[in-house]
Each structure stands twice: as C-alpha cells, then as structure tokens.
Length: 186
Image 1 (cartoon, rainbow, N blue to C red):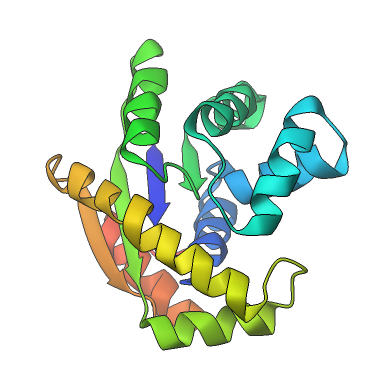
Image 2 (cartoon, rainbow, N blue to C red):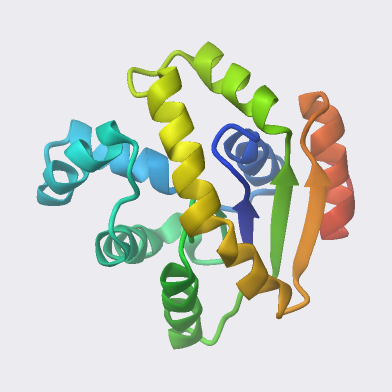
C-alpha cells in the first residue's frame, strides 16, 4: 500500500499519517522529518535544506526526491509507505510514480485533507516550531497555493483521490480517513 497524505501545511496530515501508520503497521515517511533529521545530523543534504526550510520556501524537486528515494530504501518501507509532505510539485509526483514503478508498484490512494485557512494559521502558530511564525506561515501557504495545490489536479486524473474534512477532532478525522481508504478502524 502506498498512500499519499495531501493538504496545506497544518491540516493534520502528519498526525493522521502517523495514526494510520502506527495503527495499521504501514511505514510513515514524512519529508519534513527527513529534512529535520538531515539538518540535525549535519548531512550534506541537510546543509542544503536548512536555509531553504527556514525561509519557508520549498526544497527543490531534485533534492526532495533524492531524500525520499534514500529514505525508501529503509526496510520499514519494504511493504508500502504513507507519504506525508511528498509530493509537493507535479514534478515530484511524476518522480514518485517513476520510483514506485521501478519496483512494480504504484500509489494506492491520495488522501486530501481540507481545513479552512484561518484554522490552519491558528494551528501552526500553536505548534510552536522555530520556523512557525505568522509571516513564514503565510508565505508557506502562498507557496502551497501556487506550487503544491496543482498536484491534486494531477492526481484527480488517476481517480485515486479521496477528500476528508480535517476540521474536526483527531479521532473523527482518523475515522473519516479510514473509511475513505476502505479500511477497518483500528
């Protein structure tokens, strides 16, 4: 199973991806976590990513895809993966399709989580990360609308997109995600 969790920053895709992964024994790949791990460990990729992430801009496709390809080699993703924060551009979506095709796989489902923008800003400010101030959040949302939102149109052509209302409790959203995936609630 290869599932993409999609939506603007702060909609809860990371939380839901973690819940689905942990309760259903599917590997969870968060590009944000991979970026932060590479930055923390001072890897070559991490040094390239640090300034980009702190400015609120998107990491270039080639660099993001390299990080994802490297992460997918881990044993925990041998039987599938939940992608959280990837793909964010149409090129990354095409790259992911190609990476999965190399092993005879394909995306199973894209879960599009929607939340009103005013709620997103509030959530991100409460999260309290160093790179979460209102100016950076608004820039990140503008980048999302300009560069990332078109990816969902790319995926709509595959008939694999399900949309879930993320403006509810964590458990209610989880139940909606599981229903959309056609899985039993665990």
